[in-house]
Length: 234
Image 1 (cartoon, helix red, strand yellow):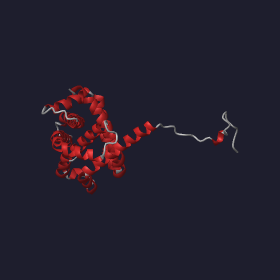
Image 2 (tube, rainbow, N blue to C red):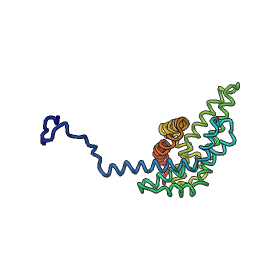
Image 3 (cartoon, one colour):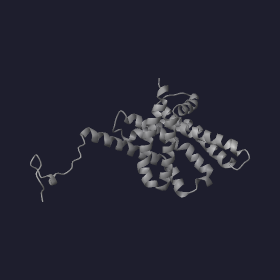
Image 4 (cartoon, rainbow, N blue to C red):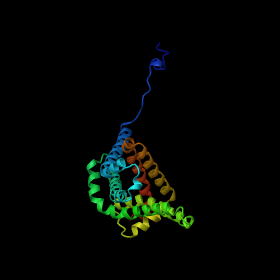
């Protein structure tokens, strides 16, 4: 049955719902998808040794030296390159993959120097919490170590975004990043939650997690870090 005709004479039951999305809207959607895919690809390729080590060893804490070195030299530069790529994509919505590669080569040394102190602080804090939790001084030192680790973890992407944006601050960068975390506590907590959830999900489903999550999460982190360091921009 064709159903009763509508006002325009077309049977009501023969009408099909249409998704009215303008050309500009589709361009915006696909530009975001393009950025996410490029960042996912860049993060995966530049962290292949770390991903392979995690695949071979389900308990990385049993190999602290190996995973400590990998964490020092791999994630920081790749995250800084992702932030620099997102900066470039804000101007050119279809920024090609080669911009990520160029940013990685250009920022590797600087990002490594910026990233290492924060990663070491987090590793030291986790080690202290695990070691001192049953000690007599544990009730005093464990909360302090936990706070130091959380502040260092939250300051890490802020410092990398600061470095990727070309805002040189020298030795003051570490204090500026920590100050930005304290000044924008809600954004810092949001970043921490996103990072923890991403790590947990990627650990549970590596292929699906790496194909979807890094680009989406880093886009949010990039926006948040941009807001956190905006006050320092000249």
